[in-house]
Image (cartoon, rainbow, N blue to C red; front, side, top):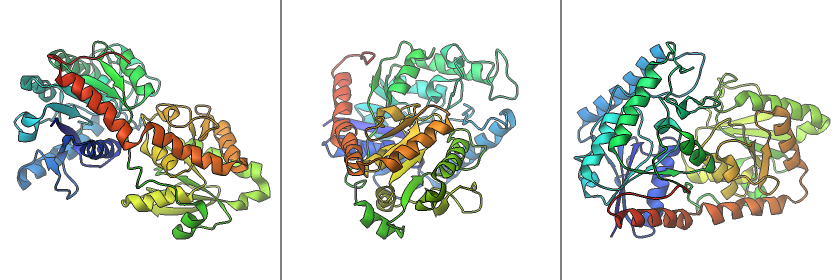
Length: 430
């Protein structure tokens, strides 16, 4: 039986962690001996392993994660709220029994004092096929996780706009050189969950000689299911006669990555357009840590806070008439896939990997990038759509055809088998 070990920083904390656990579950269902081992374990799932053998080791790991973030603040431009990882700390994983026993080593998100370039290069000593799923851009940049319009990753980074002290040989260029040296020593196949990520990888200076394949993430299609709008609204305590927009956590107007300001502007425009009919619209927000540190919305708004129960989260999606995601750059955001799986159309900007999931005017609306007016057009389109039931069915069908567990598991298994049956890792740009 093929043995696969998935290596990630956290166990389900964040999109990458969830993707890792969901893929592991999908592979287990296909009789693959699949395991997950993480840098820092939050949960109590006994099937998830950790590289920390003792409480002291776990405390040290937590300390390095926190210390890295503190040090980073001293070097980063505080006006640029963009995630950036340095390479000061790291740990070796090559002696872990699950890593040594695996036929395939599958890397996921490995930042936060985990696998820095030096420790990553150590994996070459194991002489095993390595697969690496890129959940953001960090692996092929000089430190940033979100690039926006910056094209320095196409060269050798440097003059990084995120650093206080930017220059030709700044921290981003030094990190780029560390990664270049590690990647020369290590063979691996890249998995890009979205076409946008695949194209980014092919453009990057660090990855030009690495084989890359587009395979999407998956999710639990038996958990995220349609429940009937009226029934779901009733269960969630929402008015059945109102049109419900659902959206995720938005920290503040200053937040760049999630595009909060565009959503706020779009909602203001929508209220102006609807006039007296605006009273028929309500907004539901999940993921907010509290109801105080949130923006002022133009419509009546309910705040659900953080939802850790997937069945409850699925009911939220099922109860909504449309899901709003104003993100400006995202690889393959799970909120979109989860919403569609629950039969809820999505309004989003035409950016990142979102077009891989949202088909314009078929299961949602792709607004012109960074246009609040276009985003408002999308909301109006969903509100006025006369074929709402068909729209909901098409949303669910998209997920079942493209992202269901057996579909994604089989694509990974095909790649794994190709690599195991070859003397050296290989593949083609697809």
